Structure formats: C-alpha cells, structure tokens
Length: 171
Image: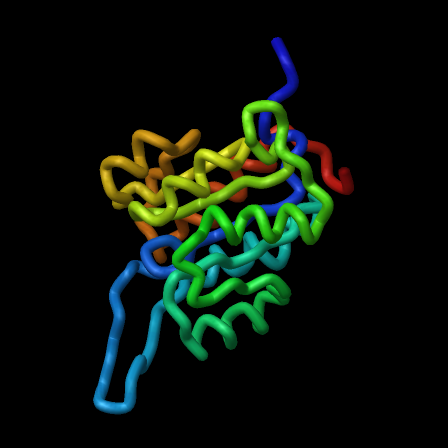
C-alpha cells in the first residue's frame, strides 16, 4: 500500500460560514452581530494541529471582524477574508509557503475543508478535502472525507482527528 495522502499535509485551509460555524448569520441594524464557533474545533486547531507540524489558514468569501477576532484567538495568521476566488487563495498560500503543485495541479501539502459551491475548486487543488455532514451535495461528492458532524458542531475537529490519525507527532 502506498503512502497515505494525509502524511504530507502541512497546511489546513478552512472555510468559515457553514464549516467553522453553522452557517447562520445574525445581522442587526448595525451589521453582523454574532457567529457561533465550536470550542472543540478551536482546540483541534490550537492544540492538535501544531503537534503534527500543520498550520491552519482561513479562506472566506465574507469579511467579518468576528472572524478576525476568532483567528486572533486561535493564532491563525493567514486569514483571507473577502476572497470569493478561493482557489486563488489556495494558490497564494501555496506560493507563500513554497508548495508546488504536482503534475496534476494538486498541492500535496494542503488539505481543505468547506461546505458550499465556492469551495469545490479549492477541494480539487488539495491532496485531501473534507466537508461537514450538512454540506451541499456537490461538495460532498468532491470531498475525500465527509464528516459525521455538521458545520459549527465539531466537524473541523473531527476532520483534524481523521487527518492526523496514524501519524506520529512532531513530524
């Protein structure tokens, strides 16, 4: 059996709305009021990924001070907000970290998780992709791994645990 695609992952790029959150937007007269994030997802990002030499990034089509604050809390340095060309975001992150695509155009060092149509192009560029259980049907078909958990309800943590399964720490 060949090497597992998960072994070479060095970067996990995440969508926000519908992946790190349940996708609901609470908007008042002054704009966006709140988003709910799952604490277990945050623990996976802060406490599990670094043990395996994997950094986290966010790529989201929306702009939000709430996302900016959550990324600061989780020490996510790469937060690409207002990025509707998410595939371009993947390429920019790959360039920043010196990752080159293979002959098929896939970045073997990058994993991606998203839930909706804008995420499909990113998923195709990454060695491993995932989506929450409640992702759009076309996204579930593209994903390497479909989580049992819904977006904003521990799906990111579930994917992180799957991603590092059978890997040695400190790699």
